Image (cartoon, rainbow, N blue to C red; front, side, top):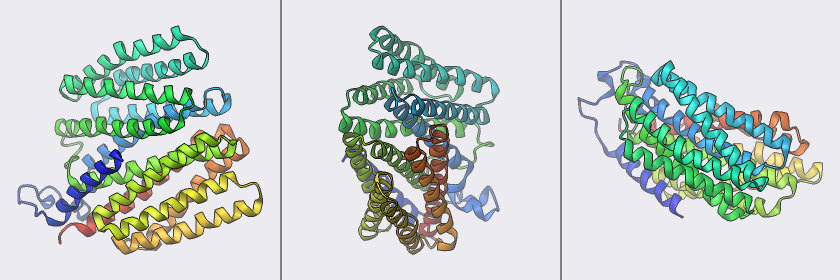
Length: 398
């Protein structure tokens, strides 16, 4: 699959850079900071910026997908509208920390208008109001794209034409995702979702270096370094896994079999990409084990949501809190040297956070659902960072 090949190519280069390159005196981290933590380039402020920006832009895509998928289920729809708003607020605050209050206020207006247009496009489709949906798309194409592109060109000193092209592509790929959801073409919709999610990272990957170059005192480090590529890839894939899983369990809990099947396939593709990432770092044998462990996690997660008896649910719960946590913690310790006593509790907490989302879906606790879904994603970032930073620390030459 195309996504898998791109991940493999990226991480193969990253592995070579991490294990074979030698820093020159001009770029050695010791020249800028005596702190031992600074020796790991994946932990720089510039790395934090790129990682957070990519995660928020990816989450924005997921929030739109969840909101548009839930159109017609009013309570579930409302909780994901709230998630969309929370995501926009956090993106604005990230822009404030990077670019200042005036720029953040401008960004907030542009981004909120975009969200409103995507919501109106979905409403137009659901209510068969072509005028409303056409008007929303016109607003995205003629207002949002040029306004965001000009904002980024001015505030982050990005070249106007490439960012305009990237933003335009992103808008129309997101439209295709919503259209396929509305048509209940779930295989295409979930394929679209993975494409658009990856597209969002391209925007973040282009923006973060420009901000870091403009404000080196705020964001020291190289956000485009190979070590940061590893951290970003780990975070993006694990966030995507979490949100795909809770989309699959939503379908399983509600008996939407066709959507469930498509979501499970997307989860399998994501697990393959995780395996590819680990293969590039540690070899194919370990990568294959990662793939198997995460496929088993997905299977247990779906089984928990689809269970029709307490016994079946407890069995699935044991596979998640027991088998998965034990096996993946051991694999991470083996590959990175990260102690299971450090990693295991973080992974266990993430599993518990995911179970909270599944219970919300199962009991129709819609008011809690969006917040719990986001909390599970946040805990997945902690897991991803632990793995990636430990991996870089081990693989970099001594």
